[in-house]
Amino acid sequence: MKVKCVVLISGNGTNLQAIINGVKNRVLNNLDIKCIISNKKAAYGLKRADLNNIPTLYLPFIKSKVSRLDYDNNLISEIKKLDINLIVCAGWMHILSDNFVNSFKNIINLHPALPKEFPGNDSITDAFNA
Image (cartoon, rainbow, N blue to C red):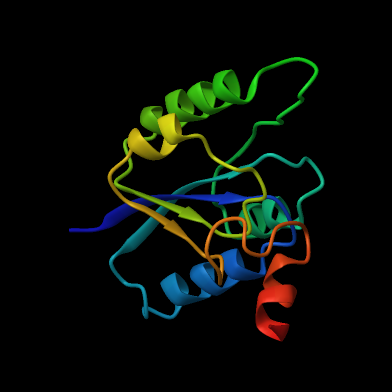
């Protein structure tokens, strides 16, 4: 049985590409990527998804228009429509609420440190250098 997954991204999508390559090379032969969701319109990861015929969804978080909780509730709703059983945060630069995290059983965050230990756009580099 395949694991149906959604990948959340905000940027270049290098981790996403590694996941896509793993599926293509049958290293991740049990994984079925159902959708890529980005909160950034210019995220190159959306292009990577398009090049690999993976559906995408752009859901911007605009603080002046929606609260963090309302945004996360909308994200929960969109993900539940996909009927997935795994969420992978691969460079997702939006801090998810407790409500979001508690709404799903299986979430993997590809961040190399504890939450808030290395915040910001350079978090992976900062964690690596530390």
